Length: 481
Ligand code: GLU
Image 1 (cartoon, rainbow, N blue to C red):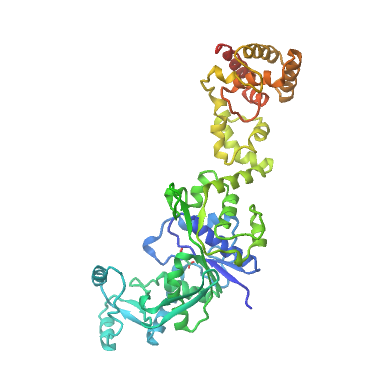
Image 2: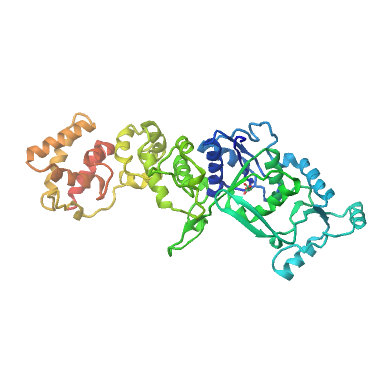
């Protein structure tokens, strides 16, 4: 058996959609889990849909998530070129070959005529008007320079079947298959034609793509057959749905949330978490493990784990997964991601990054949550004295002012503003006052933060606020009673 060769064949028409990235990932995993080759091919024959910069987005995204291709436009390979517009001249001879063999024909129908057909039937199907034009007429029109397309002659009776590794054996009535265009009037091949020619010429033996291509696949099979080429293994991936507010699901779209890799990244999701989550959209690992590095995905991936039922993109699950990735980060990466957000709050000098890390790392599911969680450092909220009342800590409006006053006296005299010093002095104070630690620390924390829920405790908050601001806030608290 030949080694598996898969390809990712995006059209540079915009952002990298979640569905595209999943196709890339599965094509990569299928190849790498079987020591095969993963090819990148840029499909840019639809010149009207090209978007400037989109090709760079493809390279950049694959690089960021670590889907390294073995062959492609930027690195070359034995089957170069890997951009369809650079292969433009190679398609015509194949189309002409089919014309010569009576399997395809020139079609001179004008746009107006085709549009009127759409109007009449409302189906958009071609009525095969030029399929049986006499040879002399074809010749005359060609010589007169009439614009033409080349269409494939599809059988009008019987059916076409193919096998898909996920969706099984599929049969379509031939009367539903249009005489598809192979070569357009601008000389470019259609996507349908070019992808078959290239998959064949590039020895792609496993074609992986989204299930929206399932209905076109009989057309591709008919092309392989017309040329007498071996049909590759087809593997279509299930649809990706989004959850609607009323609990129903529909095809994933912007109203469900970000649908592109860049959009998800901008929302604070990490590349590794996005990749890990996307791997589970349609593929189920054997055990219960859900967190997989790319290398672990390669190790565990198997085509039998792919399901044909639609997969639902669950943003909450992705958020949870992102939090898991954050929890497992080492200090250096955590600080690298968190620092820009710290700077928003504390200015450029953040010497206590590690204290911040200790109070945030287990708590956040996205780095972008940091400014909101830390906002009380920047501006003291206008809080209510009720916050000082806490049953468990045995604090109330009567004992809190005294606790705060005692804390001020101790903190004012500290020789330095370090976590240990602040900690030890407050614990000693609680002991001296013969109160629970909480009875002292609750009012101090509320006074320092002005909010009930805080990352970290009183001591970390005092440290991060600095001595002067801490004392100001504690003194201000005394005016609340
Ligand atoms: N160029 C097509 C797309 O971007 C590729 C489909 C395929 O993989 O064959 O959707």
